[in-house]
Image (cartoon, rainbow, N blue to C red):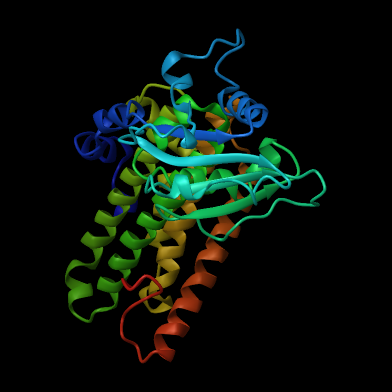
Length: 345
């Protein structure tokens, strides 16, 4: 029994009414702004970098250009921050000391101070994005995508919870970073679904009675998560959400590791092997689907089966390592049922 016996057409029909295509459309249109200040030349360079990639003709849509607003915090005028997500201060080596960043913290927005210093060997930055009303420093040798993708751009996206698709759609340079975050979030959701189902499998009698139904249900839920992820990544890359097209691509974009492959592996799962194994399988499969979707929409080609298989094994190994570390911490703390975030898996 389980998800492995559910036909493709039946799965699609069941999911059709539960996947909210309209929400993806709405998410792509949400308003946002990044407030820029500091060195004028660097602001111009960053603006050009973030907006690059809209089309071969170089035309930048008005709604995209409007997301990057130059401000002068010393001007004394009241700023409207209703849809602003963060402030980006740009300066060169030596500018940081004299910058009046205290004028920015009063906006109650995260402030990312981006310092360009050609002398540094490698980019550096904090482990986490700044909270509202606080400042964190990021030092890079140059304003390039390569230098910014380590910490700076992921932290900018961390400041954009709920509007990631809109950010990627309007600022092409951020699309790869947005796709990575959407994939990570979806994979964690799939991990939780599979983990919860595996817990049911471990409960005597209850697992015998409803375990097969739970397995079918979690496969449906994981497939839904993966299809939503594909729609979201497609919208990030400027494609209108198309449920039927996403379903056709699902087994392909991940190098063949779509819902059918996951179904086979999950249906062969033996409960005594451990709750976290099933969760790791779901996590890894979703990572592959997300990365496969990014490759497809960004490069116009499918991920190879070899690349998909390697990514799957790496992601599953990482998820299992995380699971073992979490379980060790739980046992050390007396098995209180709370993981690093206080909510178990």
